Length: 194
Image (cartoon, rainbow, N blue to C red; front, side, top):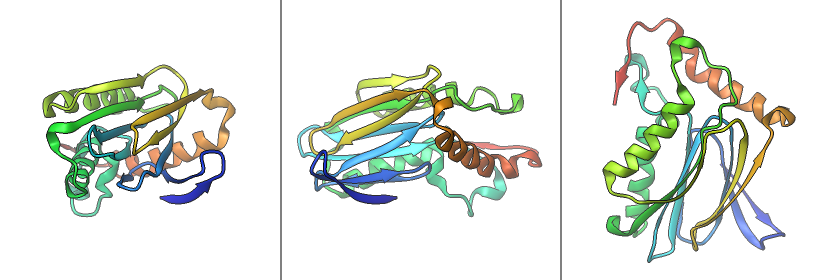
């Protein structure tokens, strides 16, 4: 995570990378850049407390990853961690609402990995539905990247779509992250689904 001051918005901005999540009670702007990943912004509609996560996989862990994994990269855990931190910060579960972004079909995945981006989208929507957290807006799928600014105190979100092919640095970073995640999967015989 990186924090900096934006002259344009005259506010502190927290930039998230894949596998990270953050909650703000102080009105920071939460910012991330998405390709295949999903960012879920969840906020208390009454208390001006909001947070964001950024994950690449819905919820698969290999047995040898359970104790050593950065679990924030998995949607199941990223959602639980974010909601838990919102509650600790004073949010009320019955007041939570969400906005979901990302899931662009921008990376090449192996056939045996399945429909990673589609799985991310379906997971995020279904998870929120099962938890009773309404999704008030979304911008999902397609073949573009997204830059997302989430104003944690007002729940306002700004999304700028961009052609990922023209942003080589972003696609390189996402490919590195993908390689790190899938590195140990090539030899693993089975997976645990949460």
